[in-house]
Image 1 (cartoon, rainbow, N blue to C red):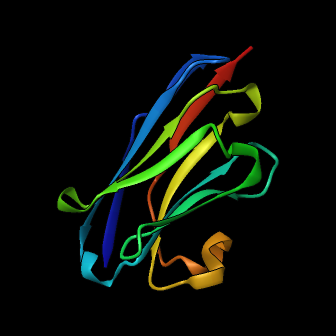
Image 2: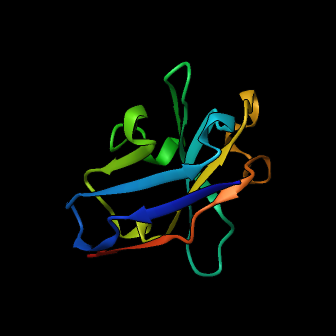
Amino acid sequence: QVQLVESGGGSVQAGGSLKLSCAASGNVASVNQMAWFRQAPGREREVVASIDARAAATYYTASVKGRFTISQDIAKNTVYLQMFTLKPEDTAMYYCAAGGSLGWRWSVAGAYNYWGQGTQVTVSS
């Protein structure tokens, strides 16, 4: 089992920035891929960014490229999502997810085995 705890959410004005953190514990040796998803009210959960822990390869959904950066601190078993130039449409509950070697399935929510409880991000115009 792997436990994920997110932190860093909050309320900001458009154009502002936030940095989310996801601390992993438990059987972290089983984890290769970690990701951030988000879900706004009435919408499906969507991938925001993902990182292959061993290859350090990163992936982003088109709407956040150039604004968000996913990174990791392996020593701390922590993944971060630095968000710049936030927009009202970024408002959502943000979830951290972890899984094994996912390859092309990095954007598929069902491919991840473990999920955090979520942290709310609200961007006002």
